[in-house]
Amino acid sequence: MDRGRAAFFSPTNYTKQVRAGDLATKPLCGNVAPAHQLAGEALEDIARRDGEIAERYQRLFEALGQQVEARYGKLGHRFARHLEPVRDELLGVQEQVSEELENLEVELPDVPEGETDEDDSRVWLLDPSRDYVQQTEHFRRVLGVDAD
View 1 (cartoon, rainbow, N blue to C red):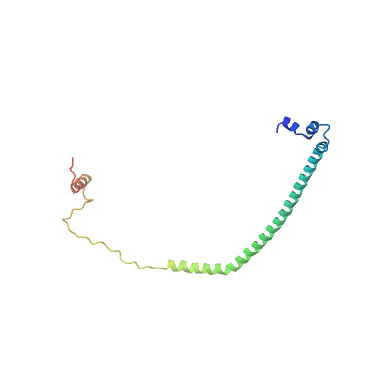
View 2: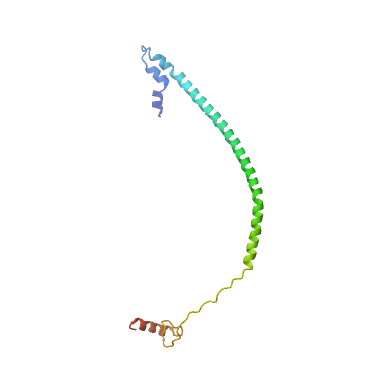
């Protein structure tokens, strides 16, 4: 709010604007500043109480957090203690499995070989014994493309 508007709405300016003969509004105008002061004090009191409540809950939450942390710490140690025999047994089983896998001998069947007709009259599309030009000419013949 700019200074002119602030001055217009100030309690002193409002009191000056009240007519001298208007007795009903004069007491109200005189009480604006004390009312403003009382409201300010009430707001400060509310802010103070709000801070006290926040501090109280902060202390409660910190205490609760410490209790929860201590309880989970105890439970963690207890869990580790109960899990230790299981972990030892698991390591023993793991060693046995590793040893079994190392000593595993698998008998694989012989790799089958494909059967082909050993017909020498058959002409293959790709013959590695041909050079590039011969292979290209053969490919064009098979496709029926003229070699231009």
